[in-house]
Length: 228
View (spheres, rainbow, N blue to C red):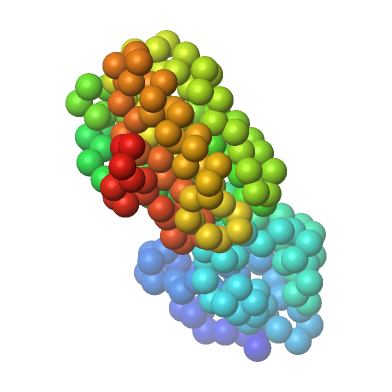
């Protein structure tokens, strides 16, 4: 059935206007982005097929490349680009919402929630620094380095210099593991220990080092690593 042949109250656009955006399921929302389907499937059915290819999870779909989406019949480059743009806006919204909160950092879950949209789905490692004041409020955050698929570098001198520039009393390091395994390697442990020691020289605390991998994370502080 074509969208135009559906009852007006069941068409995604009309339904959104009449009942509000929350009344639509994921396939209907994606159908609005796609606008049209194929000769055999309407936009909702095409959207459902795209979502099914992502295990019916928006978090998985958000990592699809344009090329992967165009593998679904009825989804060309223009539609795939529109979906990719919508997914990226969603990621940025979550990041902005989390980073805009003015609250003291008390647990690694707060930082993980903030950085997850930034690091999820990357095919390379990135290392970010979160800088805190004496009350553990965030006063700055920035990417410190980019690496390959299995390593990134913690440049101790750069991190300490940035902390001093911001007059930070605490640092939280966050990086990702594209492999999907959040457990720290020997290199991660060594670099964390070196940074902890250097920061202490300037009376700066290394509060935590968090590794994000897919929907999991490892916190050095939570695991009570002896040098933190």
